[in-house]
Image 1 (cartoon, rainbow, N blue to C red):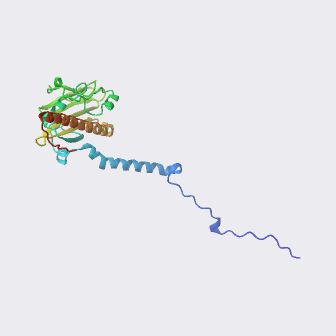
Image 2 (cartoon, rainbow, N blue to C red; image 1 turned 90 degrees about the vertical axis):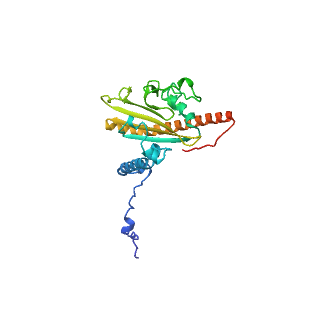
Image 3 (tube, one colour; image 1 turned 180 degrees about the vertical axis):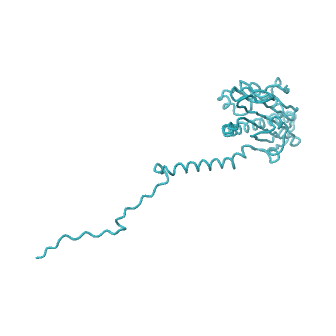
Amino acid sequence: MNRAGPAPAPRRTARAAAAPAEVPRLSGPHLPDRIRGPLAALAAAAAGAAYVLAVRPRLLRWGATTQEAAGPLPGDEIVPAPRMQSTRAVTIAAPVSDVWPWLVQLGAGRGGMYSYDWLENAAGLGIHSADRILPELQHLEVGDIVPLSRDGGLPVRLLQSRAVLGLGGTIDLRTGRVSPAGPPPDGPWLEAGWTFVLRPAGPHASRLVSRTRYDYSPLAAGLVLRPLLEPVQFVMERRMLLGIRARAESRAKGQAKARGGGHGKARGA
């Protein structure tokens, strides 16, 4: 009697025997270390390029026309060779005579900055924006200091009644002290110019253009100043221009109503 032995085990083919190769996952906690670094660098580079090419130009020239942003303006001589410049503008449905008083009383401890008071006060600047014209603050001369905080401000460098208000000075970045026009101090410094140009834009409208220009030393200071100063200044200055517009238009409406007349709005950015 023949006894059959155990059936031989089936042969495993080479394809069946081979274990499937693991494919590295490209997301989540399993992202290989050798990929994380280059991807992070690529994402940072893309974000930087998007800011420089798409976002930054809009921040630097918010509301301004191409001609306003590229052309010369009174007060450019305060910082003749800037490394940073911005030009922002707004059209106001009020005559120049109703806009100029708000500029003259600008400053901390004066009429305020017409921006986000709560943000400025959170930084300890002590600013409270007025909602009315203050007659006692309507006298300004070249050389006067326009305070930007409790600790100091910028001197008036250019003043043309109802047309131009130019501020400027050199800031010692070590001490924060501001000096008027003159040779920069030894060590790191920031030369700043801030000019407001006010022009008629019709019988009952005005165009307010704000330009800032900066020069600095050493060049490495720009690595900190540009990403820090430009976005913050955009947020605060945009709100300031809109704040001046709202106040001037409200005052013009009140005066027109008191006279029993009115006029249409002429608004821009």
